[in-house]
Every structure is written in structure tokens, then in C-alpha cells.
Amino acid sequence: MQTETDWRLMMSETLDHLKLHKHITKADQAADPYFYLEFEVPEGTTRFDVSLEYPKAEDCIIDLGCLDPDITPFPASSGFRGWSGGARDSFFIALDDATPGYVHGKIEPGTWQIILGLYKVPETGADVELTISFDQTPRKIAPQPVTPNPVRQGAGWYKGDLHCHTFHSDARGGPELLHAAAKQAGLDFLAVADHNTTTQRRYFHPQSSEDLVFVRGMEVTTAVGHANVFGIDDWLDFRMTQPDHAHIVAKAAHDRGGLFSINHDKPPIDWTYELPETDCMEVWQSAWLMYNWVSLARYQKRLSDGLRVSLIGGSDFHQPDRLLPEGPLVLARPTTVLWLEELSEQAVLDAMKAGLGYVTEGPDGPHLSLTSGMARMGEEVSADTASFSVHVEGANGDLLRWVDASGCRQEVLISGDTVQLSFNEPVTGFLRAEIVAKANHQDLLEEFLGAFKGKKLPLGLSEEEIREQPIIRALSNPIYIKTE
Image (cartoon, rainbow, N blue to C red):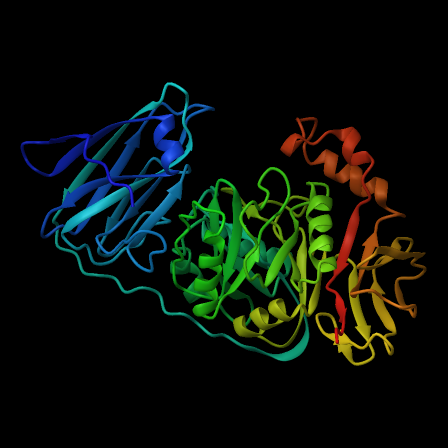
């Protein structure tokens, strides 16, 4: 781990605060995207406050976090005390409370560290100043939240969103607003995956219920790739700096009983690490026309190469400071729909890993269920007996595509609100299904464009580019062909 000794330390006469100064350079960024500044926490401290100042600009963005004396070099299993990325310039940690994104609890005296993420550093460098103040007011240690296990009995299709954010990372809105948005969308489960922290559980653990099950999540966020970890309370070390480090993080997730999922592998944040053992891939993130055809092509390539990775979707919705009305860019666009024997966190995780579900454009989007005899999505069948069927609802006038390892095998018109369609030809590798907008293509396109109200489209998209793109309304997980 990089530590620094050449910064200037100044302490006030009352010894209750200090200032740290450092000139950050491009060479520092090239050596390690994470920069560490040590400071001493006095005996008896029950709270400390940190503020960061630097010349913030388009080419100067520095993230902020905190590590306690238990931290080790990557991969650490403890010692994390908070991360706010570029969303905040100050935080506090106390025995009984902490800034969202930071972990309250015991404050050991000794050497702590401020961790700076050197996301963007200008050619001339940047002067960074940290002010840290200490308080010894008596406080009691507040316990960490207890992991819940609510269960709703009954088998069926359940709807959820597997990727969203609160002000525990870089959204403006609090957990209460996101909770209200999930209820407004009619969801059954929700995974809140704030960036590099799990402190959103302070709200969501006690609020998880059989009406709306919250699935534990954390988005491992770096400058060159994001991944969600599901189903564990533990913080996982996000400080990946080498192409093979993703293997370490994925193994840590699996060792703790969690799932590892690659996020939005498309511009502008493509997955550039080596591909580790991966349970899921977020093939559809936010509105379809936000480059999701790139993610789908990469997913298709991985399936064609013989990988078996489950398809999921997530809105990546960053809750604003107000509850928005329903629309194309809000929570649960898209929605992941899973077949569960009961609604519980474990059942959601099992179905995600198994691929027993599909992704649709929203809570009221088309239904798309693929089977082959008794085999369901995510399962396998013998090549010589394979005969496939899809049950489709809510896509009258659209197109159904059958896709295997060789590409699109067949495209047929969906005639009727509820239909059953079959595919009985030989299949290579796997078979999956897509619903492509036809009857309402123009309406969906105009709805997407209208969401920006004449503003520049995001992600460098052009109107000409998206007008040429088919609009997917639903994607099924594959059924695989057995290999001898």
C-alpha cells in the first residue's frame, strides 16, 4: 500500500484538529489510482469530521474515503470505514452515527488513513487540503443492523430491480424515497447497490419485509469497470488496480456465499478487467437505447464461446431528492422478473444464479417465458430432443426473435395479447428469445427522446444513431444444449 511522508502536518494549539496538505501529480495517479494520507486519531475520540478542498474542475475530480487501522493492502477484509467517491467533500464518523456511505462504530486510537481516488488529475497537478477535527463528547456505540430474512409464501413470477442508488453513494435522494419509488412501481424485490459501500443497510435491513424484500448489494466501482456483488453484508475491497484483480474480488464474493455480476459492459464504462467466475451479467441497464445493444452483443459472444452466465437487468437509477412519476428513465426500467418458489432474498439469489427469469422494459412490460419440455430458462436439454416454446403476453404486433449461438435463427410476428410460439429446429449451443418493438416502435422512440426535452442526449448518443436501432422490449435467459 502506498503511504506518504512528504505532506506537511499542522495541528492547532488546542490539539482538536489538524490539516493535511499535498500536491497531487499525474505521476501519483500513474503509480496508483488510490492515494493514502495517514493521520493519528487521539485516545478517547468519539467522533471526527473530515473536509476536503481541492480545485475541482472538469479535468480535476478526486474521490474521498476513509480507512481505519485494520486496513491492509489489497485485498483487505476489514478496515473500511467509508467511501463517498466524488459525491461529497466532507464526512464524519462517530460511535453512534456516520455520514451516509461511512461506517459508524468503535473508533480505535492510532493511525487512520484518508483514501483519495485520483479519478482525474490535471497536467499541472492539484493542491489538496484536508481538515480533520476530533471530538470526545461521551457517546454510546450504536449496533450494526441485523440481516433480516422476510419470506412471502407462494410460487410465481416476481418483479424487481437489481441496480439502484441512494445518497449513501452518489444519488441525491435518501433510502426512504427509493423505498417509495419501489412501492410505486409495484416491485416485489429491490437490490440497492451503492458504490463501494454497504451502509445503505442501516435503512434497508429493518425495512425489508414480505411486501418488498431488499436484496443486499454493493457496486464495486472503479474507473475501468463496475460489478455488483449480491447477497452479503461484508464490504469487499474495490481497490482493483490490475487486470487479474477481478478474480480476487469475485472469489471473495463467492467465498462469502454471494453472487458476482458484471455491470453495463458498454460505453462509457466497459468491463476491461479479465473476466472472473461470473454468476450474472447486467445485459440491460437503464433505457434500451442507452447503448444496451452493445451489452447484448457482448453477452451473446460470451454465450457463443461456451460460457453460462445468467442475464439480468437493472435501472441503475440514482434516486433524486423527490419522488418522480413513472416514465422511461426511472426505477425498474428495466425490470428483472424471476420465477420463485417463495419471495425471499435467498430465493431471489438462487433464481438469479440459475437464470430462471427474463428482463422486460418495465413493471408492466411484456411477459416472456421460455421452456423446452420440463426444462426452464437456465437449464439444459439434449440436442436430439429439443423443442422450444415461449409464452408471450403484452406484445401484440411486435416481433419475436429466436437466437442461438449462430445468431438470429428466426423472426416471427406476435399476433395476439397472449400467445404460445414454438421453435422445433436444431439448435447450436443454446436458445434464447427476444421481443422487438414493431407496432409501437415509434412511440417508444419518441418517449425516450422526449425524456430529454430537447437537451443533448447522454453518453454521446446521436438521434440518428438511435433511430436506426431496434428497440428490445424483453429478453429471456437461455436454455442450454447439453454438451457430451
